[in-house]
Image (tube, rainbow, N blue to C red; front, side, top):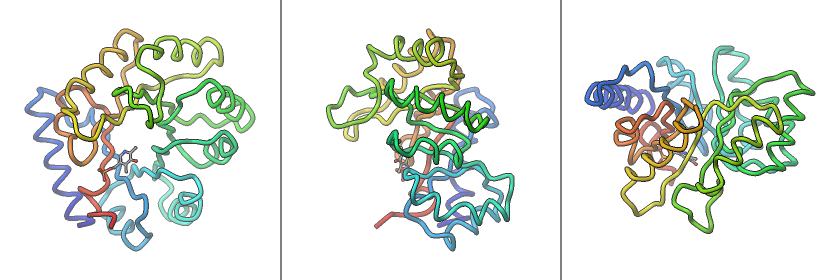
Length: 219
Ligand SMILES: *Cc1c(COP(=O)(O)O)cnc(C)c1O
C-alpha cells in the first residue's frame, strides 16, 4: 500500500481516462488520508502525490500543519461534513471544501473568505441518492442553492460533489450530478471513490477521492 497503491491507481486513472477519450491530466487525484498517520502519509507525498483529503477539521489540524511546512505545495481538501462553528478553521486550513450543502454554511463560508482573504475552491455536495441520512442538498433544490451561493453570497463555485448510495449502481447518480453541473455552467465534478472511480471518470469526474485503494483498509 502507500506508494504502491498510489502507482497502481495512477495507472488505472490513466487507463480509465484514455478509454473515455479524456486527458488523464483533467482528473485530479485526491488521496484520502483520514485515520492514517503521518508515517503512512509521508511515503505517498515522497512519491509525488500533492492533493490530500481529510473528513474532519480537528484531525486535519493535528496532522497537516507540520507536513505543509515541509512541503509547501501540498493541497488539502475537506471532504467531510462541516459544522458552522468550524468554518473559520476550515477556511484557514483547507485549499478546497467539498461539502457546502446548506444556506447557513454558505453564509458563514462567505463571511470567512472575506475576513481571512483566503479563497478555497468550493464544491456543493448534492445528496444524489436522495437518502435521508446523507448530507448534501436535494438534487431538486440544487439549482436554487447554487444560485443562492453565487448571487446571494458572491461565492465562486468550482463544482459539485456526491457520494452515491452504497449498494446501487453509481453510474446513473454520476450522470445526474454531471447533468446538474452542466445546466448550471459548472465544470468541476468531485465524484468517484475507491470502488467506483473508473465509472466516475467515464462520466466526467474531475476530482476523484481515493482512500483505501491507496492506503489500504481503515480497519
Ligand atoms: C472516506 C471517503 C472517501 C474515500 O473512500 P475510499 O472508499 O476509501 O476510497 C471519499 N470521499 C469521502 C467523502 C469520504 O468520506
